[in-house]
Amino acid sequence: MDTTLPIHQNPYDIESIRGDFPILSEKINGHPLAFLDSGASPQKPEAVLQRMEHMYRHEYANVHRGAYTLSQAATDHYENARQTVARYLNAASDEEIIFTRNVTSSINLVAHCYGREFLKSGDEIIITHMEHHANIVPWQLLREAVGIELKVIPIDDAGNLMMDKFEELLSPRTRLVSVTHISNVLGTVLPVKEIIRLAHAHDARVLIDGAQGIMHSRVDVQELDVDFYGFTGHKLYGPSGIGVLYGKRDILNSMPPYEGGGDMIDRVTFEKTTYRETPARFEAGTPAIVEAAGLAAAVEYVESIGIERIAAHEQSLLDYATARLSAIEGLRIYGEAEDKAGVVSFTIEGVHPHDISTIIDSHGVAVRAGHHCAQPLMDRFDLAATARASLGMYNNKSDIDQLVEALEFAKDIFN
Amino acid sequence: MDDMLRELYQEVILDHGKNPRNFRHPEDATCKADGNNPLCGDQLTVYAKVGDDQTIKDVAFEGRGCAISLASASMMTEIASGKSISQVQNLFDLFHKLCTGEEEGMVPDEFADDIEKLRVMSGVRQFPMRVKCATLAWHAIHAAVTGENNASTE
Image (tube, rainbow over all chains, first blue to last red; front, side, top):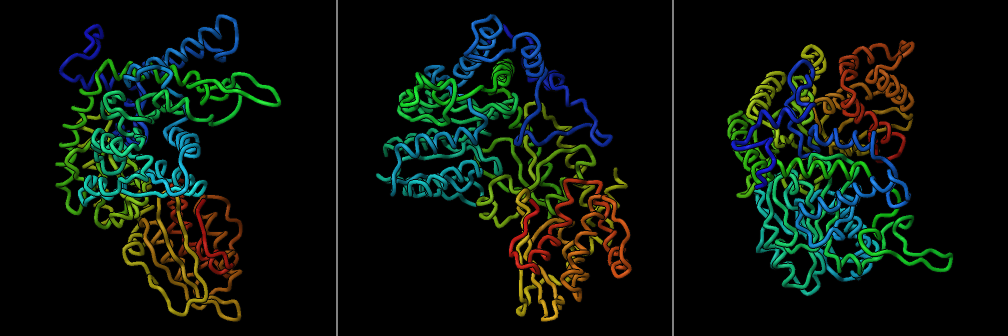
């Protein structure tokens, strides 16, 4: 651990961390905010807010264009952000970091540029039953375009991936395995390293949807030996509007461009255009400049605390939340995988999740209700919706206590 | 805030939500439509039996949803039954305004009693995210009797 960062020392200083997030001092409907929807998008620390405002005020211009001081400064900050992300993921090179809009666009980029270039009719892509729509629909679009087949790894009732079924699905026709790192509904942490090993043994590439993974675990792309890893800035306590696609350089350079436009070209004539290598090839047009700097600030902030310590804190809070929620009569938790991150999906008998969400909001508690963009998973459990409490680095036991009290109030309204 | 909630979740709504009326699939329905709320995944199917005189003889529904959407669907089936297609369309328009807090204007005498009954749903106007829950079944009956088959709150 870097000992030059003095702010957050052992033990995990939850009060100090909470103090870094201005929004946590807001009152919602007269109550303190118990923000339990970090799985959708966590709140932002002062460091990110200040970094972005500072850049807009003092360092802003378009990147990769001007020969003047400000444009050079903005370009440096944008490219430094790429280096920060590369270092955080332990990528072999910052050229392996492509800035996108979000995980959805990261996955669509792979589906479009890798899928349409290298996959053909009869090739198979394997996903899991607990994917977010963002890791289902792009492959269905690819299926319509080139005729690939989509195979789905089943899960058991606790939400564990059935690895034996995965091995059965792997075949010489398997070209790509695209799976979530952590389920946004069940909290299941997938054995991604083993999945990657098995897929590679069958000469298949692997894409990991790291939307949830990035905020609850250490991601080392070289150690994983993953081919593509997508995540989004806003789920790592950074701004929305910027996502990341990590890809192995050789693979990326073998892929055609995604969007055409400025910045991605080598030379344009009306007869023929040549393209730059990665990452420029995949970043047409003016990128999310200040968001990149904000993402870098978010990465540095997370590093100053340590993702392992954040994960350990969330794990103990998950245990506390699970125990307290389980004690509520009529409440059922979905997702009891052996390896589980800070996400608790639940239903309460006789109270629909939307009604839960509306009612507990009146007590300052923010949770998500709905299908969580994972309708096939909802169907698996014969559900239309669940309520979901998801944890971030700043949550504490009081948040959970406030949730439990608010749920009792919701039950009271319905009884 | 708690008062606004108690107004939204008042006894009549909770009762309709827990024990929805006409929650069935009539064999002799002449039309039906699915109502989807893609944001939350709630789904209702509304069935109607329309006579040759363009009068709705029977309305029923099935599906799942929150207390607000089930209660609204339940009340819709009671009110739409016996009405003409054009009357249902007028009622939908009035009900939509009631839910969003838009000026209803003069309520025609023929609908006065129905709108009075539906007014229990007006608490939803304090919760804009929930207006679509209240209007889902009305979108669906409108789609069913006008031959659309599918209604979405989007």
